[in-house]
Image 1 (cartoon, rainbow, N blue to C red):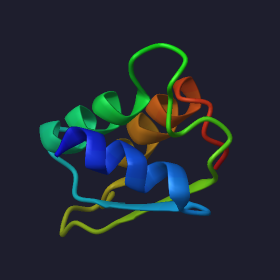
Image 2: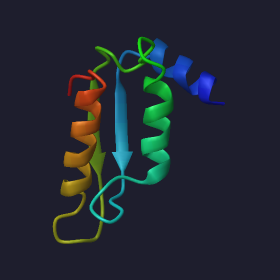
Image 3: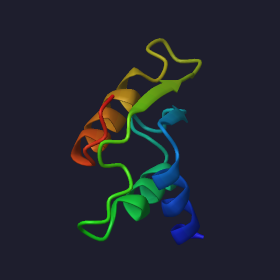
Image 4: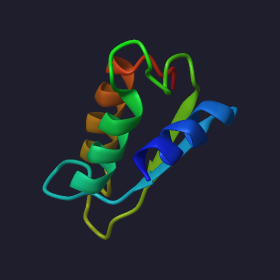
Length: 81
């Protein structure tokens, strides 16, 4: 399953992340998927792959903090936003 996900990321033109906010961050499953697709070293599926982030939450600041956290993760994966 992880290999299929990694390959699916490689063949698309861009990635849109839609995320809720869990304790001022992204869900653990999303972080795990990003980790799988970006490893091992030298085989990062996100390198130079454009990405965008949106989210929604009933809270006052919605998903602002989760989106900021995800931006940092994607920057480490060399994914322009």
